[in-house]
Image: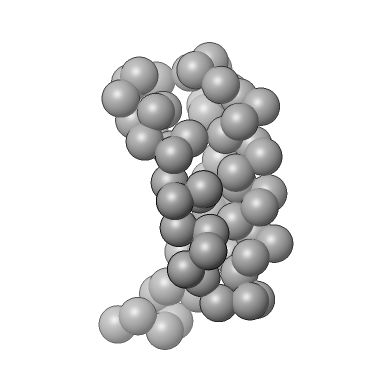
Length: 68
């Protein structure tokens, strides 16, 4: 993801945009991701410590398992 401001804005909007469309078992993961992006704001350093990737892992794993 890096520190590109456009990427950060997209990351901040995505959880809120998609949270209502996900299965029940992923809603908690999306809520954690949304809270992280809101707390991180536009600070690119917040996205470089691995926290964002860790929060995305359950979502990505579910997508890889069920959306191929």
